[in-house]
Image (cartoon, rainbow, N blue to C red; front, top):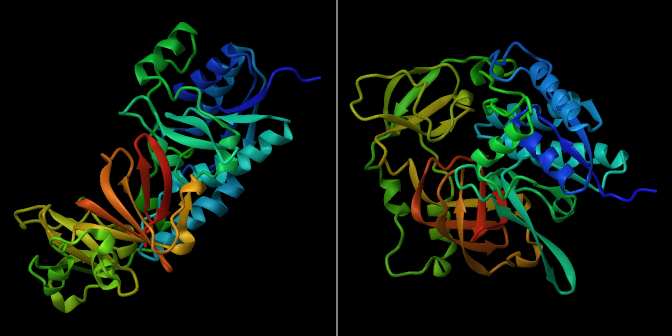
Length: 403
């Protein structure tokens, strides 16, 4: 008969998940370590950055040191179907995916969770820098996704697509700690990962050469780089109307401020050539290989059908800095389902469109067709396919895929 709650920890071979396992043991859980292998193709990973064999060995040695059972699970087929194929199709459509957010929703807290439940686990745990709260609403438990205590490492944005069902089974043992404290705990426990540097790149793949990765399916194709002037007539409609609160804007203003702008080649001048519009994203500065412009050049839009990249000169270009964005109805996700807005309702939150970005005041307005998010300050490089997440203080309330 089982007495202790059983938890399966996703041991990645890094210091954070190692310490997560150690802390759970200290708290009296029955702990099982599990390493996820999500990738086989070594040709596009930058060797020595995050080789999975080394990570798997480190994870096994940590489990051995802690005296916990260990097993590896191969999820590469599911990862390719749910994450890699999604990435290819998004880039091909000229959108910018966030595979880390999808990896958490689809792999770690879905397929991995189901594998853990086959081992009769009560919970799964990861080394994420975020925290979980629990409150009662209408007599039922409601789980909260809270920011990590270390503001430099807060990873709640990466978990912004989790559901109540997933949060109910999730534990984040290091979320209340600062990164230096995590390393100190690892050193005191003599864990092999104590001084191991943090991995970069795609979750559980490692650092990937993105152009080579994309070229596996998306072939290079020459196209034009067009520079769009900053005094285009369309930009006049993007200004925030003076003296009117966002919640009082009509749909025409909301659409003008929030929907992507469609440019045409005859609106600007040709600066050079690129190797494929699907390799670029809005807000990108590097890789254009165009010199002599004085100010830095930024991608402000991509057209993968016509294979054209539209660029703007300087960080203040109105095509680069937008106040609003739109999330289609079926792409809206409320972690706090009890706070979901109904059509016609609006609410004030703070939001971000990328990891580690400072939170910015935003008005959320729900309409029949979806959600408009209007920021108090213009946001640089709002890209279709990325995720916007909105917060109330430290709590992530919901998220959505940017249209």
